[in-house]
Length: 297
Image (cartoon, rainbow, N blue to C red):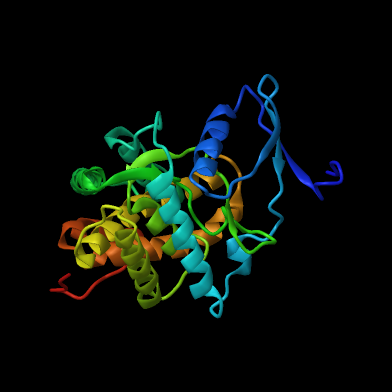
């Protein structure tokens, strides 16, 4: 919409008060701005009716702009933004990404992906195996350094602004959570895939920058990468469930095309660690895959 001569366009956020509370958005926008992270500027607010008037970053998402030839440059900027969020953003009064929330998210996987989407009825043994895996993933997540965590830090929620800086959106569900969570959200993005060697290169660059900036990441990259992979498995099991739920419950079919990439991420991690061998068997049964006798992980 047109608004005065100083603004080419602005965004109106309409959040019906019976469905959404804009106060977390306002609070976290202020915290991120104070950390020198570019977020929409708030020009006006009507909390009673759920309206906000925001600055407009344009329509160029990171997903829409990133190409093999500019990916290194853009992901360097991503790392800069991410570390600023993690190091400088206040975590006062943020919800905690705790055991309960982590488990609630992963429960979407057997309910919506295995059950509703694939029609797989799990045996008692499989249910127990999955619960054991959930326990290990939760234990890893809560043992990591806890920092400001966006929770949806991926290529659709970063905007390439006219000044070529990255603007951050959709941060209202931020929590105090594991330091690898937003890293894996970005580099094992549900909407764009890269070769694993390339992913690792960008993750190494994040880890090196984080160490230089004084963030308490593990001293050994191997330890950090294991945390990254295990956190990614937690996230991708959740996402498989969410994407299936968006289709079957909410009638949104646009996410079904993204299921294969997310499944590929989860399967590759499951196959790399002995702890997740039972999950590989569940994936195999769900996809009618027969592995050679004596196959080992």
